[in-house]
Image 1 (tube, rainbow, N blue to C red):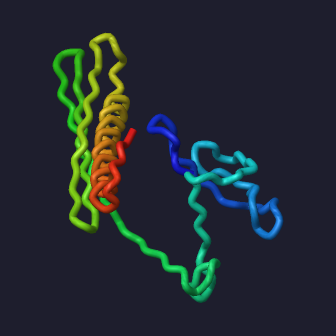
Image 2: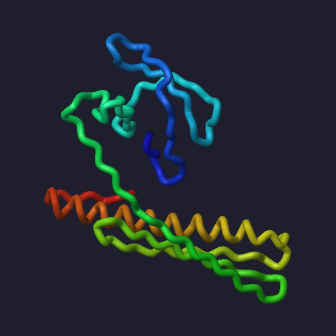
Image 3: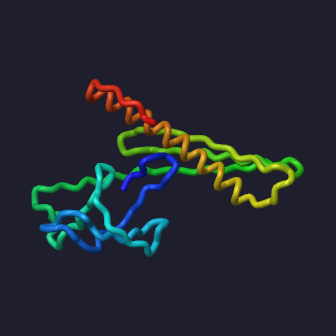
Length: 158
């Protein structure tokens, strides 16, 4: 299930039971992300994507006419830290290169105050998360431009 906002995470789960008649919702879902071990009944909305595993012949459970496409996008993360006395700055740069040649770069920075404990991992985590957030914002903008170009209807990412 996609996240409804940038402040929450995408949830991934496995349907372990179908409670509705003839395969209809609600579905019993075992969540495999941060809610490990949690099960719930779900009535999927427009933000849910249900993927059916292929059968032994390579056809999807939905029928032989279904087609699956896979693409690989690579994200490269570079982290650098600069210390001066008891202060430190950590910079992160993340780069995305898609199969179609799309290349984007996100940037993030974190600062360690002189009175903070010296735990470099915290600066790295903050800087990388901020760089990924910047990359995400750019990718939403590219999607908005593609939607506008292909449909003629502007979409403004939030």
